[in-house]
Image 1 (cartoon, rainbow, N blue to C red):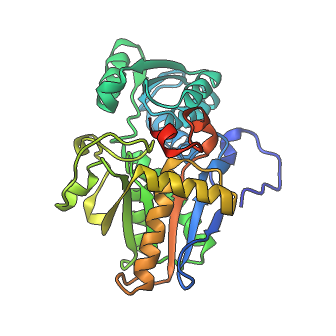
Image 2: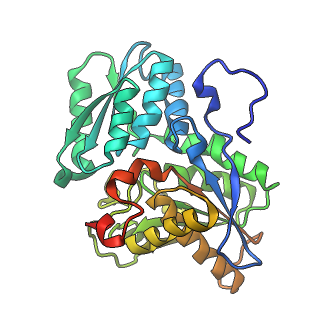
Image 3: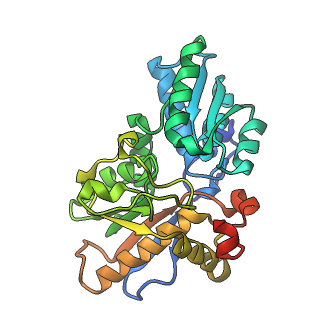
Amino acid sequence: MTIHERPLESVLETVGQTPLVHVHGGPDDVRIYAKLESFNPGASIKDRIGRYMLERMLERGDVPAGGTIVEPTAGNTGIGFAIAAEQLGLDAIFVVPERFSVEKQQLMEALGAEIINTPTEDGMERAIERAHELAAELDDAVVPQQFSNPLNTEAHYETTGPEIYEALDGEVGAVVAGCGTAGTLMGIARYALEQDSETHVAAVEPEGSVYGELFGEERTEDEYKIEGIGTHDVETNELFDPELVDAVYPVSDRDAQDELKRLAREEGHLVASSAGAASVAARRVAREIADGDIETPHNTVVTVFPDSSERYLSKGIYRSFEEWSS
């Protein structure tokens, strides 16, 4: 994987085919694997939807050639869309809540995009509203809207899911992934359940997120430090389909940071907090399989490490928990 035997015409051709790597720290008889999405050209899983969504939208006429995309994003989606937009002849504007990674915003600008910030306290809801306002003010502009566009899910159904199954010869017992827009998990889950309806599907959210309310579980809505996953309002996460999910695992900021540090120190993975949370949940699922609490068609758990820790160094991601979380 990630080995190309011929010269490529565009960076877009390097999106996908990321490595699937064994993650240690789980029970001996249940293997955990992670898809390393930092190997994409924009260093995150969002490169997949950047390419897939914009190519499909151009094909369908949702956005005209030479048009503009306006997207609310925490950063990685903006980077993925910016890479694809430039290669496909589109302009890009991104609406980003102020609190999100400065590194991501600088990269979006380097890729030719315009950045518009909204107040942190107004959350992603205001970023979504502002994006639609801007698109209405401009000619030939459209909001791809990763939170509700089925192309987000379709991108992972068509690429990420098949890659996982090819790498493991179809022997996938459980799929575990963090949910922000939920496109990643929904796409992989749809593909996985078509291969074997007994596959266990688990969503991951930070403590303070409220996805669990969709399953009748009690959640206390609160702020959290983990970036890129979770929700404060499930009404904005239209792609999440509870019927495809068996369980939701909340992970604390502290546990996620402890794990991302362990992954770096013991396994050489330079990953961010969403990957730390995913790894914590994947290890829990693996333990439940080993203990017989979950029945799966195979003793394997697959998760996704969405991006790299390098985009969060300014926030002290490897410092003490108190420094990072302050």
